[in-house]
Image (cartoon, rainbow, N blue to C red):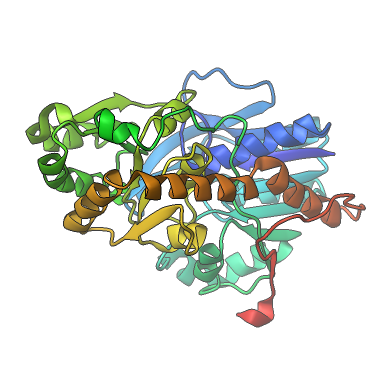
Length: 387
């Protein structure tokens, strides 16, 4: 099977969508299919041989963070050329309805008679665009052969405006890449405690909450260090905010291939993100056996789902974050139990299991026998009648 995976967000941009698209392509190609990632140019980057770039990516600021859209002449025609040259059987758009590829790619595929599957990754409280253009967008969505959401919160957000038959297929994690590195729960008490923030530096990711919490943590653990891994246009702002904390905050810049080392060497992964539709970094931390303290948002609640691998706290309560971190650092047995629970949950999201579900959708759309079992603890179908 020949599949085009179209994504506005892709490497070198980091985030949930690039991780999902890249790992899905790797898994499908390992199984003997031909999966091509179609995205836009974002500067010099050593691409895998299955990546094709069309147009130029531009950064925009929305929903409290960074997003992208693609510009360029004759984008739809150029996408048609990519799909025709690749003899694609199916086009899978990630970020359906998002400008530019979320709209241009489906029309390019339909002109060639290629069915389109769309995956939606974003949660939002409200959308003026969806409200104003509800009718024409509904007509576009009705032409999709299948619509997928990465979580129930995404379905909830989209169902405020559109009526669709949804399938829920979550994000996955590469458990062969993300794994524990040997740091033990007792090490926090014999060595300096290690706290980790890993994510883009933007307001919605809540790094300021951790800076406000650190003085209380340092009062109890003077040698504690918060490692801030990530980049973003707000880096200088956060560096200025962290000056009063001195050497207890360490900025290491963007990390990629060494992410498992950062997760695995941390005693706690702290994720105060205010807005999330899922939480890929949570899966990565779980797969590394790292206990987590995470913000109370709809996406994280969906992933944690009452599990023992994380403590969920209010988004903007530095005192609660400080006291929880102090209590967990002092309790290695609880952190050990959280680590074991996280490893068990991460196994449920291993990429072979997630990719089988995606492949089953393609097979059904193309009228072929899937030949695989939908082996997942997650509900896969949400009917129109439910909404």
